[in-house]
Image 1 (cartoon, one colour):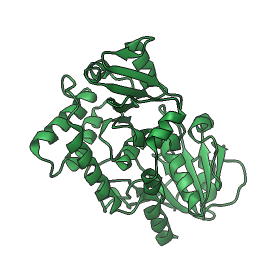
Image 2 (spheres, rainbow, N blue to C red):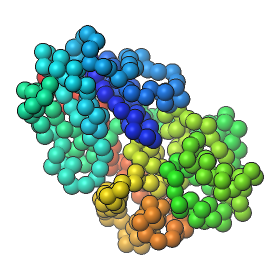
Image 3 (cartoon, rainbow, N blue to C red):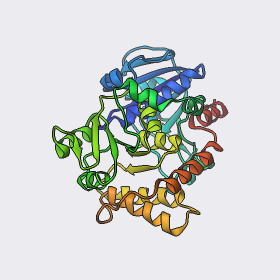
Length: 350
């Protein structure tokens, strides 16, 4: 099938991160994808080699004639141009609104619902809500068919050495990918108490780490390495190589769960405080069945890292934390991945 995938880059590249993974995953299964994006520059470092089967195009003005597609996906509610929608009426595709990821209960209620278009250029068409999620009553998570086999054959020591990163035998490796975070000074102090190699990703993480640590990039038992911008495939390797991963937004949050390493999530902050409810909803699912002691530690750490609960506590013991992450990942693997479900959903409605 031919898929049109629309993406608008809002601020932190999470939108294009999700859309590129979805487009590349579709193409790897023999689908053809036109990825319409208003700010494609990020793909120069995020996906420098491109992907066979994915055509990256500038946001359309709606006037150009083009082959009608079988599927139109608007990612995160970014509506296609009115002229494009008007042409859809002549050869109606399956029209999908791919929503943001959330663990909240409304996702199960809303996933797969139709939205008849009663006015405007798309009058008479139906748009369908497709929600990623963590349960079988949702659309699942992005997971390429070969992801786990790649991770199982991954050589962390070799990957780090290729990037001139040499961990000391006693060091824990912590990756840092975050927004501007007032709790980062406290985290640096916590990490500096034990031998730690901090791998700070390009952007806000590296800038804050450099500001706090100075030119030496050291404090106590901690030393830091500032990484260049990593393509998505290399970012996955970073998560696999680390002992603890600090991640943000949606794309890296999902990849950290597939990595099955202890992770701390900085959710995208919202002015109305809705992010606190989203964080609590995920914690409720992730911590189900976990003994009260470790569950409380992990919950306090996540809340403090997101500015929702006092001072940042020490990192919990890694053994139980890692085992919970592995069990959680295994549970997610029992659910069909997002692209498998999306293709099935589309075929049922063609």
